[in-house]
Amino acid sequence: MTAITARRENRAANVVLLDGAKKPGAKILVSGGSRCNVTNRVVSERDFWGGRATVVRRVLRAFTADAAAAFFHDLGVLLHEEADGKLFPDSSRSRDVLNALLRESEKLGVVLLADHRVLDVARADGRLRVSTAQTEFQASAVVLATGGQSLPKTGSDGFGYVLAQRLGHSIVTTTPALAPLVLDESTSNHRDLAGVSVDVGLAVWVDGTIETRLQGPLLWTHVGASGPVAMNASRHWLRAHDAGKRVAITINFCGSRSFEQVEAEMIAASSATPRASVHTLVSRFVPDSVARSILSGLALDPATLLAHLTRSDRRTIAHALVESPLDVVGTRGYNFAEATAGGVSLDEVDPATMESRICPGLYVVGEILDVDGRIGGFNFQWAWSSGFVAGRALARRAAHK
Image (cartoon, rainbow, N blue to C red; front, side, top):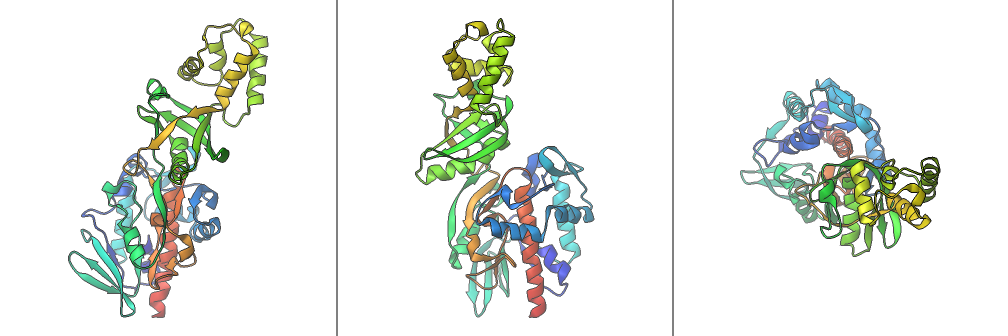
């Protein structure tokens, strides 16, 4: 995106794109289950965590989700909307997204050098020297678009942070983001529920206070919990845990309904159908298998008639429905994470140009920055927006020179 924008706005700019892989774009190819969730219908700074929201908002507004959809439409990649505003290519092929970007780069005269792993970037006589295993380049400007550390097999192994630090930047501590959760084998019955999905609300508690509330589908797996809401919660749990804070996650199986609302529904159901079983009652709120699991964990007989349900047991069930503990012990790490939290501090980058405030001529875009979005195409949109801003600035820089 950076290279395409620079050449579109200034054909005189000499743009070389260096990629360490023999075949560029591996992360695009595996994204979205190989379908590539290009962006979202509605994107704002509220969909992101990390650096200052005002900076994120400014960059996003420079190249909106509508602009991204139009950009890909012009490249022949038509998009359609799916659940939660996610935009996918009509072909449902991530390969089509990658090929469109590569074709446009080639058409515009961008020089793509694959299998050119960058080993170092250093200041040299007012310019920047880029060293690869094969050769060296002298440039008036260099863009770090290396990604973070998620899915390192695709090439984003964190070396971009090393380069940024060598050039004077500070790095906000990095952790995996959008990673499946690992649950405690001794206290969780996730294996019995593997494959079951349910819409829930999650609350992330840090030092006894709710720090974040999240809504969405949760999928139990053989190792723990996945699905959008669990993966969105992973960065909050992990960053608090790594900071040495007391962190816990609780599930509300009733979305955003409160204990009082759920208990009132249970009382009404008991009055209307006193001969129904407790299992039938709990199954009004959650799938059958989850109802059995909840009652088993509470050591309550699922065949108990509502007419015989004590007030204490009813309140215990209501509490379990709105605030059950999710016994998280970790995440599945960078190998399974879709993004990286932390990175180059946004305070050290000019949001109008993405140029470093520390090292003139250095530009920083995408996941390497301290910005991570929730699931739904938001991290790709950050890549498109920040890449566009940097590309436009490079075009102006070249014209000025």
